[in-house]
Image 1 (tube, helix red, strand yellow):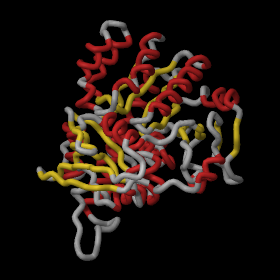
Image 2 (cartoon, helix red, strand yellow; image 1 turned 45 degrees about the vertical axis):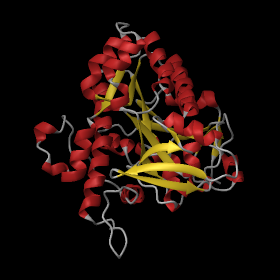
Image 3 (tube, rainbow, N blue to C red; image 1 turned 135 degrees about the vertical axis):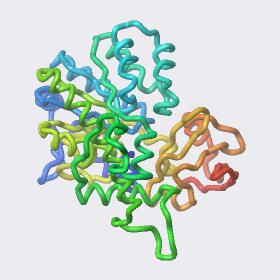
Length: 377
């Protein structure tokens, strides 16, 4: 879940002035407060856990994560790095990579990276190389996607204890988290609709969706807490998507329930985000990154690549994509008549699209091709 999907359409250009590029800012009741990088990092290095947010397809976000990881490792060499993108069963592959037993191609093949994640591995490799070069233990934080889908379909209680991959019952979701997830849920194609519109917060299918997201949050929090119990003197840093961190409702909430209330969570902040959301509790601190959002966010979609298929993972409320009828689960098959097989190709074709000309977009939905003509902003 990206910041654009969470916070809606970007605010006025002047709004980004609250977080200049290259500057750390702490949200506070008195307003955003600039903080010296060295002072902030010194304080963060004394925390038990530091969570680094990301939009998975942003090179700028991953560069910021690497720089922050390097700064923390300098201050506190004994640390581990948790990865949202890797399910627990693949922990032995991460161990072999850090031990120097696998070359990059064999490492990615052993993980089956396109199947487990779907985002360009090149965005993550600089971080993974740094971990290997400095023998930083890597932690697989996640569960299998099929378990998340099962909870979404049946509910957490319907899954036998022995089939939950060791994950305990999550702490109850806050009202704010449920409202946040409801906005996201309404854009999924599996959500029923009627003449009265989409179901509300009390709909049972929405309750199961919340449980599926909390399963994800809880699994990551438990893996982090387990590492802290085994190595109480070590810092745990983790790479986790924005939606599991913003507002402290996801992984930070589950960590608090597990006794890790001192965890910090940090978010990169892009030009165009509305400063009205920079309120206490959004994050421990945010950092201004100097890159524009990728072309996919001009449409208001969040893309994943799976086996040569480009799928829409999220649709931002109020975006061009929502107004044009794009849905979560749609596959983008071509841009301006040219086939696409990766999210990167979609972004490149959007960036190269002639200004002022409608964008030709072909989707596959439920086995049918759907051609669209979109007027880009």
